[in-house]
Length: 420
Image 1 (cartoon, rainbow, N blue to C red):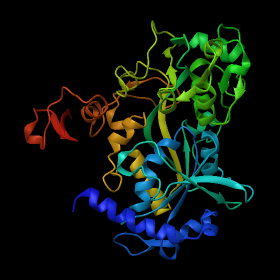
Image 2 (cartoon, rainbow, N blue to C red; image 1 turned 90 degrees about the horizontal axis):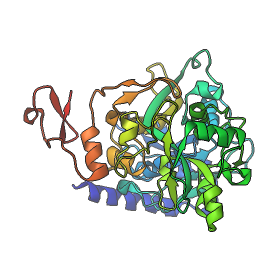
Image 3 (cartoon, rainbow, N blue to C red; image 1 turned 90 degrees about the vertical axis):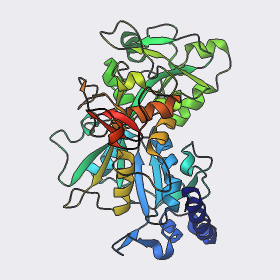
């Protein structure tokens, strides 16, 4: 059976179940368990009942990536799950796992989830529809997602608590963004320090037009580490989340307002056509770089020329085998980390490209601390050729279907000959 037919059958079956759930149940996140018979689904191969809701909290910058995967996970006939996501900031996500802090302190906190009606599935595009549900007070997260290391948030200074693991996912680039009509093209680390640290650099002198986050935000923490401004001492207006910064920047009409406004966003937001990314020149560099050389290729991130980047951190409680305690959380982490393909034909590399992140297998450099020194990186199973092909439509790599078609020292990875 073709993947598209399998996807359609699963979609119809799960849609029927969803529509059978009454509106009162849909209002509660706890009631989402009823989207699967009995609130649990048998784990493939074991028959062990598994709760079908996975509670995730943390980075708002990571939400589009979750949205791209969640609908397919919902309709997966083998290991279905409903991903409930609450954007609270990276450091809140890390703290939710390291300290066990609940996602909600009352019964009026709304979270997002994606079901058979969300219509992303294998397309991997931004969700056309997301649902909301109300978290019960005291709900504990299964996964905490952070754009930054726990230590950057002031957590885990002596190491992560026993039973907690930081699984690392795709690489994100953090950017300075302006309205598409702005006449500004670039910013240096020194200029960013003067803008967000001191408020003394034209044209970004008006605090009301400096759109930032707060010290719980991984975006602000990572950029702050890059430019030397403490995340708690930024000038400007705290817009709360990435969506609000995008709205604030994209909604500017007057030329004078567009010129004096600037914000901070992950690349998946700042690459949208309503905005413009500023080339960034880090300390010691002679010129500025954008994350991309060609649209979507993230070449300057992958090679280490664009400086502000780091891996997505997936914190979770683990069992004695070192895997997430919640089996469906284990699945989501495996998809995000690239150790297992997502269900129903969702291609991880395609999804990564469209969400403006880089799977580790496409990187040529690595770092082990926030904005730390870069070192050469050789993935165990490189996917740089496949990433280039997906991002740009072309690659100089030789296409292959087996290792025998590749030269000595190469292996056939994701359809292309890559250096071993």
